[in-house]
Length: 278
Image (cartoon, rainbow, N blue to C red; front, side, top):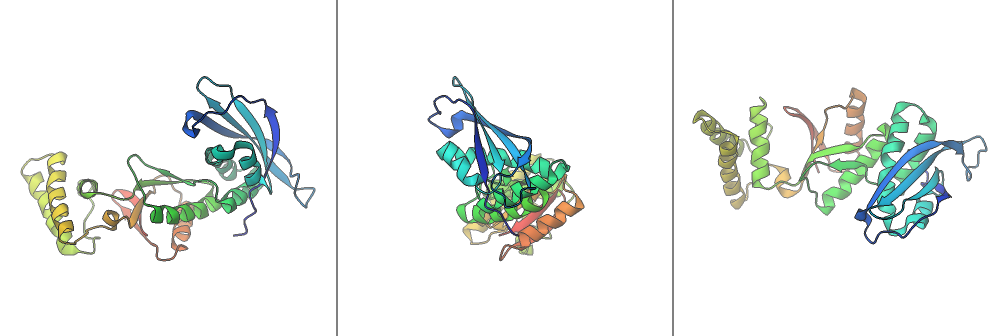
């Protein structure tokens, strides 16, 4: 993919007050404000998105700035917002993605997407509650998500990352409760023992909590013996939400993921998601 260096020419808008001491104290939002000629483009006919960024903090005045999504956007944002640029780049992702996928401003948004992805300045995925990634996984996921966004204008939603024994037990219990099978696990013997423990707890009239506890005890024992039923337990896998993805989006995700060396993708139907081995 030919990526333009993300560029935005900053047009000063509203006077600003004192910046908050911490980035997370600020509420950053962005929207597409229209299009205009790209000031740095070689083609006088080329148009670019005009993006309005607003930063507001509790008890402080708002700051606004307008950026033109052309060559130089990354530098413009960093010059304007400094250490808070990361939050600004993340805020730009959603409105650019919507413009890219909804059709209006689609051509201009495509240039903005190329620039944003090429700069590597924004995060193109969302983590579910209590989901964590180690640094190695995060680097791979970032590249996969950027490729996917460049084609679809959509963020990836990660439902599971690194797991401990309890969260792995919860995942396996829920898979069986939704009618799924544990036959996909490579260590069939380890999977069968966990499955049997869950079934025994269920036959005894136990609820989900007790079934999870039974599975967790077995998983912890297996881990002590060097057996890891899932790559999730070793920070080597993630799950991606597939609900809401169109057929084209699913294909785009597979291509984006498989372009990363060593990555394998498995689509699981119950519950529906992509299991990605990193």
